[in-house]
Amino acid sequence: MGLVEKKSLAFQAQIIIGDMKKISDEVDHSMPFGIHIVNCNDVETYKCFQTLNANKWKSRLSEMPLQESFKEDEIDWANTVYLSPDATDVLLDFNVADSRESYTADKKHATSFIIGGLIDRTIVKNATLNQYNSLGIKNLKCKRLPIAEYFDKSVNMIANKKELSLDAVVRILSRFKMIKLNSPESEPAEIWRKVLLEAIPLRTIKSK
Image (cartoon, rainbow, N blue to C red):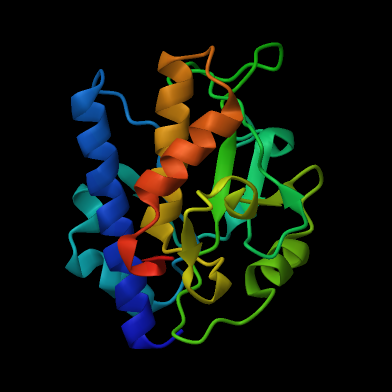
């Protein structure tokens, strides 16, 4: 990524933190997800985050690679999903157990997500899927959001666009989680239809 893309990455991360704070203020002062920004291992990228006062965000900013950024009791790889628009498997549902609870082996734990921070003005097919495969983490699953399955058919994605900004992806996951926590009787399909229409930016949508 060039400097422009790195600045965009940092800016999108800042939007995500703002969205999380807004949701926590509206609900019960707990964030839907803990945000961990890892692999910021070059001076230019790190500087882009620091320019936006990332040290004051409610998140973890790490120079370490993904596998080295978490202690053994901080993440359950078997309950973690790597998101890629090119994945074959579809994210139809996920565990929304209260993330404020500490993880123990005999208790369900809220699903964690990994979103590759690849920002480029030219979309490279399979880029995040290849990144997932290169990790080689046992039990880590790769899935895509169910846009093709549940996005409202009354509107069209321009050029069948599958790629979304990082903040749009986190917004979708957060809305799904909060609705399911507050209305556990809701069907996942109905939640997806609602949150996809609400969270996908209008610039990627056009009317028929």
